[in-house]
Length: 224
Image (tube, rainbow, N blue to C red; front, side):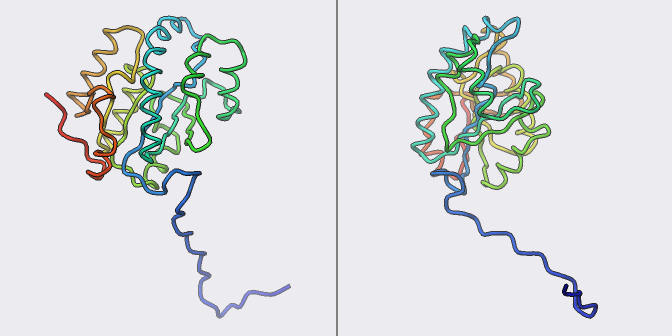
C-alpha cells in the first residue's frame, strides 16, 4: 500500500470533460433555443380529464408538427413531466403506463411520445424548475429562449413560465400548442403570460425556428 506524501501539495481534482459534439444522439451540445413539452405524457385519469382531453387532442396535433420542425432545425426537445406521485417511476414507465393500461390519455401520448434523442425531466410539483434538473440542463446547453407548450396552460405551463421569466429566459408560448380545461382559462393564462411575462404567444405556424436560431435565440418583439 502506497502512503501519501505529507510534503506534497493539495491534490488537484480532475478537469471537467470537454463539451461533447454529440451529447445526446443527434441533439447539439449547444442550443440557444429549446422546445419544452409540459405534462403531455399524461394518463388524464383525474376528475376533469375528459374536459382537458377535449382541448388537448387537437392541440397535440399542432404540437407534434412543431416538434418535427424543431427536430429538423436541430432544436432540442425537453419533456418536463409530472411524476404523478410515482416516485420510483422513470420516463419509460410513464410512457408504457399511458400506452398500455387503457387510460383515457392514450391518444394524447400516442401523438406526442418521446423518441430516443429527446430529453426528459420528471418534476414533483407544478413548475418544471422546482426540484428538478431543468435549470442545469438549460444552462449546460446555453439556452436563451424556451418555447413552452403542453398542459395545462393555466397551471403547470403558467408556473413554469413564471420561473423561466425570473431566470431571464426569453419566452415563447404558442397559443395553439397549450390547452386548459376551458377556452376561457386558456385565454386568460395566455394573456397573463403575454402581458406580465412578456411572452410571444403567436400561433406555432407563425414561428420561424430557423430565423429564431439565426437571431441567437432572441425572439422578435411580440405583437401588441
